[in-house]
Length: 220
Image (cartoon, rainbow, N blue to C red; front, top):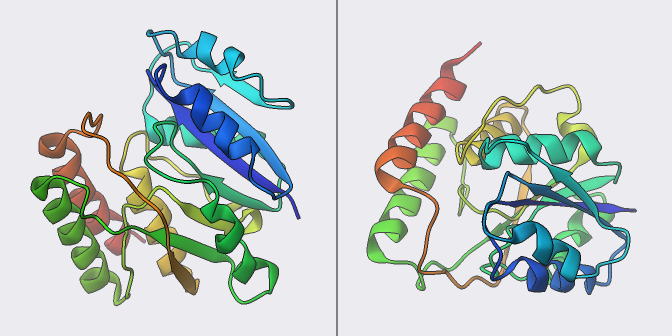
């Protein structure tokens, strides 16, 4: 069973090469798809410098956002299972080994890796907890970390879904589709170390996530 790892990257020059090497070192049958979202800081050169064999790179001619980058990656993914992985070293791709096991055993089609958020600033930690709580209230769910990047699913789960999110609201859209379709989400603890420089803008992306949760919950 092949795991398609989609890595959206925007101005990740300091970390992207090491992030890709870490992904390539995971003992799982992988295909790695990097979506360079019109980076301007040398990310392109660093992707090449990583020298990861078999990697596929998609270049956006303009910056379109994380959601759009993931959607571009999904269109090129051929693996049986898909996972999203950031290029900033916050997450450890070795967690894929444990995450894929419930899917391989046929216990579920969707797995979330949930984080301990102690390394986040208090503001972001509270924001994450609020959005997860709101998700559970709206959808009658018991998700532990709605905003986690490490979402893994069998590709056929969303093959008939036209995702539309362009930005960080992708996390909401994916979760909403899984929950509305009655998918049983297995949740496993993962490693996480928050970085100090965040691309997410809480004053914009936080309210948008709330609006997206409401929109997907009540949309027919």
